[in-house]
Image 1 (tube, rainbow, N blue to C red):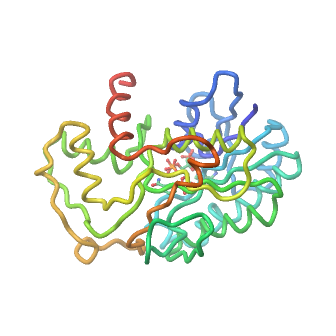
Image 2: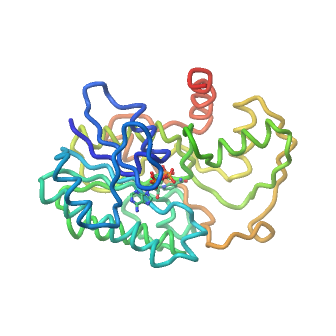
Length: 291
Ligand SMILES: NC(=O)c1ccc[n+]([C@@H]2O[C@H](COP(=O)([O-])OP(=O)(O)OC[C@H]3O[C@@H](n4cnc5c(N)ncnc54)[C@H](OP(=O)(O)O)[C@@H]3O)[C@@H](O)[C@H]2O)c1
C-alpha cells in the first residue's frame, strides 16, 4: 500500500515510518524541518497540497501535520485554524479527487473533560483554540471526503530524533537531577506514538471508516504518569513535586479528564492498546536500540 504522511518530520510521522511494513511505500512530508527521505509540502497551501497528492498518488493519506503547541494557538488564532482546520479540508478534497482514503489524527481535547473515559460517539465540546481548530479539521474532513477515518490520540510520546515531548523531557530532567512540578488534576490517556501508529496502519489496512480512539489504555493523571516514567527509566521520583492547575497556570484551557475509551479499537481492529506501564517499558527498551 502507498501512504502519503503529513507531519512526517514530527513525532507520530517518524514513528509511523518506524513501525511500517517493509512492503509499504511511504511519502513522508515536512514543512519547515526537512529530514532525510521527506518531501516538502506546506499543507496550508491548497495548490501545493493538490500537486503533491496527485504526484504521489497514494492509496491512503495519513494526516498528522498540525499546529501542536496548544498555548501558541491561543496567540496565533488564524494560523491555528488554517493549519488544523482548513488544511485538513484541502487534504480531504485532494484525497477524494484521486479516490484515496484519508485518516486524520485528532485529539482527546475535542472533549471538555467534564466526565472522562469518552467513547467515539460521545458529544464533543472543544475548549480553547487548539481544541476548536482540531475539531474544525474533523468537520472539514467529513465535509470533503467520503472515505475518512479519525484517529484520536492523547498526550503523544515516544522517541523523536530532534524534539522533546512530555515523556522525553521528564526523562531528561530527572536524569539531570532537576526537580519538576507536575499537575495532579489533569487526566488523560497518554499514548505511545508507536502504538498509535500501529492502530492507524490497522485502520488503513482493514479499510475502516469513522472515529477511533487510538490512545493509551489508561485514565491517569499527569503526576501519576510522571511517576510511572521515573519507574520505567529507573529514575528518582522524589524529584517530582505535585502541583495543581490553579498554581501551574497555562494559557490555553486544559480538560480536567479527557481520557479516552479504547474498547472500540480493540474490538474492531482486533489489536491491543497498551497501558502506560507497558508502553513506557517498551520506550525504555527501545532506547537501547536507538541510541
Ligand atoms: N503531541 C500530543 O500530545 C498530541 C496529543 C493529541 C493529539 N495530537 C495530534 O497528533 C498529531 C501528531 O502530533 P505530533 O506530536 O507528532 O506533532 P509534532 O511532533 O508537533 O509535529 C508536527 C508536524 O506538523 C508539521 N506541520 C506543521 N505545520 C505544517 C504545515 N503548514 N505544512 C506541513 N506540515 C506542517 C510539522 O512539520 P515541520 O516540523 O517540518 O514544519 C511537523 O511534522 C497532530 O495532529 C496532533 O494534533 C498530538
